[in-house]
Image (cartoon, rainbow, N blue to C red; front, side, top):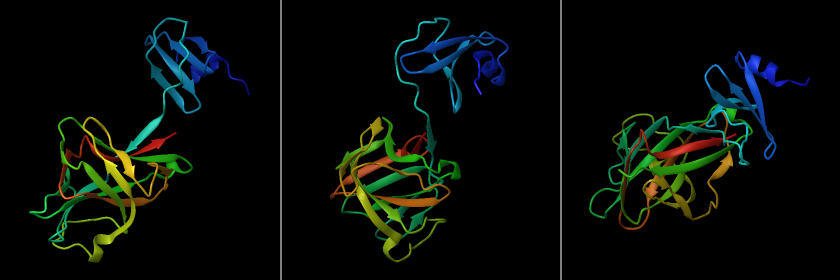
Length: 222
């Protein structure tokens, strides 16, 4: 079945529309006279676009559709004591050689709708974050997530596979500097709860962040 611009406009709830087409990238745009916005129509739906009345559209790729999965919980593990501080507001990766090392435990729930999509692990800091020392941390998977405060963590900290080493930067994303992983992209483990641990590298490192606005995330690419 072939849909006309007027039929699509009706489905989207537009009372009237003007069809615009960008032949460079095969994009269909609908201008809605009701709210004076231009919408990009895709098979995923319609997205507000930052063009106005002009029917001359530049050649550029369509907006990337991304979804960010925030951690269910961020917890701190004190290596010397085995204590866990569950679901804290500030993440921390710390090594000084004088007091206990501190690692961050992160838990994620990956939605079932991500089946067949690509996920990306990212670690981002804001300009307000603390970042001193080596600036590097190792990424491990965990056999199971932390679920409560504890005075001692199970034997071996439930630390599982070593994925690689990343170097953090302020106002940006950490980059992989050592393997075994060479990419932060992986098939989304749809419907699963996954956990990991971020561990400081070298003798001294101090990375701290507000977990509401920074730290580890999983980005779903559609």
